[in-house]
Length: 442
Image 1 (tube, rainbow, N blue to C red):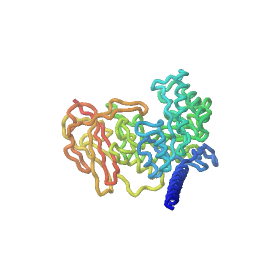
Image 2 (image 1 turned 135 degrees about the vertical axis):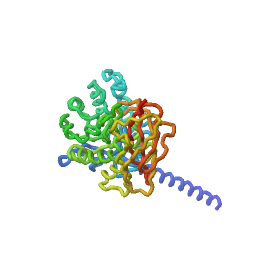
Image 3 (image 1 turned 60 degrees about the horizontal axis):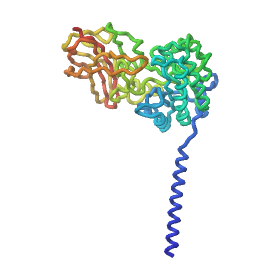
Image 4 (image 1 turned 60 degrees about the vertical axis):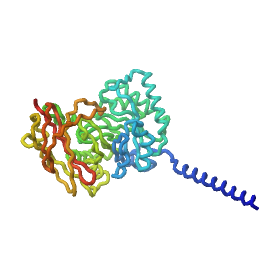
């Protein structure tokens, strides 16, 4: 009897292990999903992305593997990348993060720009790039969060050889061979007749164009008409006025908008140009859902270096959801140095002298703090969004007194161009900001 009981016990254990294994395998299989079927279709006279049979108007952010998942919490539905992974996150991790948060991804394929040394008359180099990208496509094509393939980024910027578009066509054709579920596009810096005409004749495998534009987004309809493009498109980069689109000081320092001016411009451009073209525009990706140094640490950033959300963040939540959030960050209207003028007055200071900056803000928060910095003007400048090192801060303590309206500071001893940065941070983790360029004269 004891031996029979032992056999029964062993049988029960074996069955339990089998059942556990079967349940585990079943759970794993349940999480495996088919790739999304994405199409570009004309519905009731309007071009639309269609994901698994449902229209999909892109409400997204350009996110180079940063806080991409937060887009979902504020009404967005997608993000785009510039490449297939970096030291922060692999492409698979980015797609998994998107899927977990109900987001779709335009995956950037890193095509080398002519300005970075690629010779598109070099057939061997072009073929080598194609085969390298084929491996990336095969590796990622079946992920359910994949929306489309972005072939290169601003390949027309600084480019003279139109054969780059032949390479784009070969890549798009390869994608059609390897992946029948996702459309292809390429990201243009602006939109110009020269490229549009060539792409129309030589790139039949591209499903739509993607346009990247900043201040001139407000005139997008006219620019597209001048280029002669009549097909569907996404706006895959847009945001504040670019540093090439604003006034400069007499020493060539571009004058940055305050965070409030940026947010107001964002709302105007989105309503007029992105929502305004209901026929051909299929959505957009605001730049940058993260933080980067480009002329300043704040110019194109929706987050600060410390991780605070800015006014553009709130503006996008309003545009994506149709409602203003309960919390609104401070309004930063202007900054000036008393007796010297504001951002547009070519402020010149003497070395090592005391001055007072006056700020004009309006807020409703119970608690407000200031973060202040004097920084050298950027001198190592990138092109087309390429890397720029952050300018050095003036290490010596120059700010002697500050309150919500006035900041007393000493100008740097060393002559040269600088900026005074002021961040107004509230108790909800939002920062409004402005900076004022000034020149210390020797």
